[in-house]
Amino acid sequence: MVKKISKQVLEGLGSIGNELGEQLKGEVKKAVGVDEKKDKNSDGGSGIDLFPDLVEMSKGEMNEKQVEDEMKKRQEMAELRQAMGLGRDVEKEMEEVRRKRENEEEDERRREEELKERKKRERAEQMTVVDDETPQHKKRKKRGGAFARGKKPSAEEMTATGEFSKKGE
Figure 1 (tube, rainbow, N blue to C red):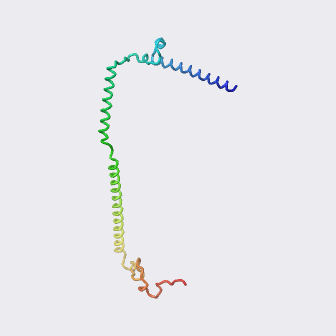
Figure 2 (figure 1 turned 90 degrees about the vertical axis):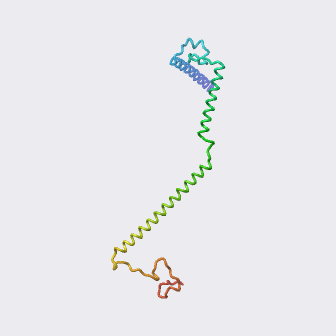
Figure 3 (figure 1 turned 120 degrees about the vertical axis):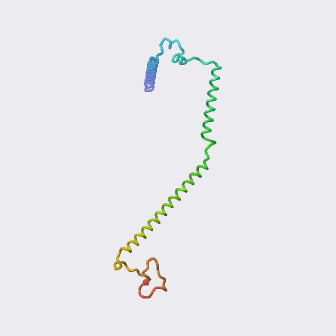
């Protein structure tokens, strides 16, 4: 029973679709300006009634048109090949990109080194300016020997007075 009902529903939907299609077809024909009387007499699938000013070409005209189209196609292909050249030289392009990147990296390194040098010079200038501006009695004493920074004395240079730390036993 359920199958029968579903089949009837589908048939009903199909008939509604057909009716809607016919209505749309009529609306389109009215919009385009096709007479219903002419439409009844024609086969309906040719489309000649929609474009009455079109005429059929003879075989000679058809061949001539095909030759013209082929010539245009060949000409466009030749222009495209000429525009593209003989093809892309991918290896050459990759080498250029690689070279460009290396140059940019080298320039960046050079800029960084110049920046470091400039900062170093500025610091040295500031130190000399500070040394020149501070009075002699406020300057820190420069000590040599065991207290020199960056230089660690060897065991022979050390005295036994305490500069050498004791190792735990």
